[in-house]
Length: 382
Image (cartoon, rainbow, N blue to C red; front, side, top):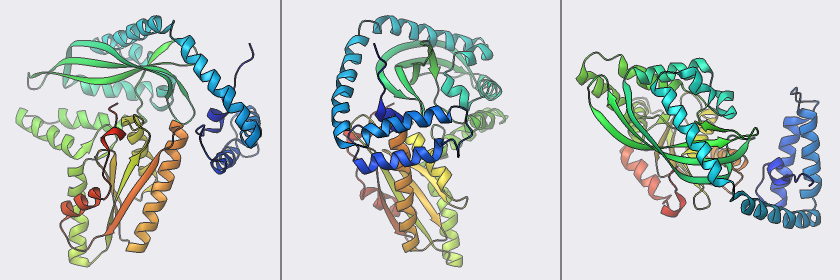
């Protein structure tokens, strides 16, 4: 059987994308992979794939015929995958259990070997070991029970790679070595099947620095009361998942700009950006990717925080009203483009912005959030 090529995936566009979106995606990929501009060894082969895909999707008639075949292929793939899913689930569970066993026994190199290739592109063995050692200074796992809670045929690992994945609910019982307290909680972890067909653990972190910092910060405190206070304050002001400030941390940092405004009349503006998409799309992975993109776009003097319900707050320092709106529009446009390319879905970014005029910061932030109400159906826990 001839191999079926997913031209939508190659061009990184949704199957319902408008022709101008397809053309824009093609031009963007040409700039990235053209052999005259890209030094990667696979650039020429990648460019050939891109050209073939655009030759079909760039023509309305060819695209219509291809889309019918594309839908039949997708439907057939889903039906054929059902028989092997039970065996895959067993293999994925065994990998998940082995991973947490290695962590409990401090076998960090072996645990690292169980990570996905996507994770290993972002995380080194040294940084993984440092992270787990910092956790081990505080906590010891007493019990770990994984339970599969979902399957995904197309799971986006990063901007270029996707594969099948299984989600597990991990119930952990752990003891705090500093306080003796025992706690139990549940979180999600993913097992993914990449090109070699093996199941591996997917973390999804781009950088472990903020996680290491969190546990080192806690471990360096000497007394029990100080430990609890320090960790609680760090947790309350920093979103460890997304690597940005929480609402409380954002308002505390914004208070410094409020002081400069009142004393030196230095202007600033607040903007709120809301991530919206099809039901079930907006997950922690999506909001984390959005935060990563925003951090790259913002200046060092700006402040970024994750508020709640898929909304980010941005403080734009030393800027007037007109410029603030222009910047907010640019941020929304760039983040939406990144998320559409990464998750192959119609993601939109709604925003509102207001120049600070001396009011209370928390009241101003609440007013901006009210302008961007969140439908509960838009959010799905990850």
